[in-house]
Amino acid sequence: MNSGELTPKDVRRWVANRFYYQKSIPLKDAAILSNCPERDVRREWIQRIIDHDGRTANEGGIEAWLHLGLAVGISREQMLDESQVLPGVRYAVDAYVNFCKTKPWIESVAASLTELFGPDAIRERLVALEEHYPWIDPCGFDYFRARLKQAPQDASYALNLVLQYCDTVEMQQKAVEALTFKCDLLWSQLEAIERGDTRAGVSCV
Image (cartoon, rainbow, N blue to C red; front, top):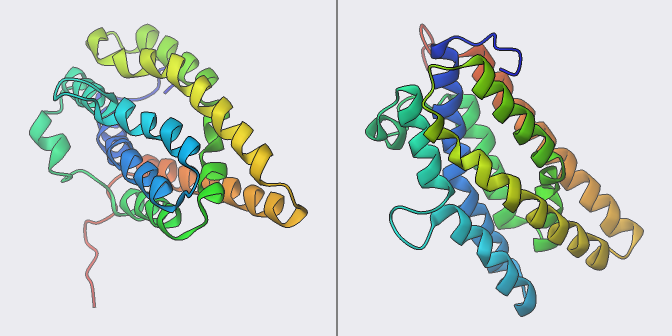
């Protein structure tokens, strides 16, 4: 993507599949909230859900990603019906949501620390999209512009929580394992998207 080598079909496959991850982010954050006994933490963390869901129908990161879909030629209906979501992507994202439902809240917070690397990646991606893919309507890039501000704040708060609450060697190791799990999950998503639709010709027995 960053070197301009993707076809329009490739870009649309990435946008449609990444949307399944984007729409699941508030679900994993709600799971973290449900497991967290710390009221002060809940007060802060709930902003993440608002950032993605918005307070009205025309706000939030999910809505902004739907606009990106339109900008690359995917209808709103196609984005929402999940018909283009690859099995590998669905499995990885669902595993992340389930992790946050079943693990201690601070481990789930640790898993979110991939956001520490987000701003640089988003900045590079935005430049590449604007430079190499002029066929994409620039209004579709609003999601990335918003995350350039939100992601550093989110990551800083999450990191401070992990440093505060993971105060034993055992808990610190759990935090590392959670972050490793999240990195593997993101890698699995990208690998599935790169391979494309592998369902054709496969029968279930």
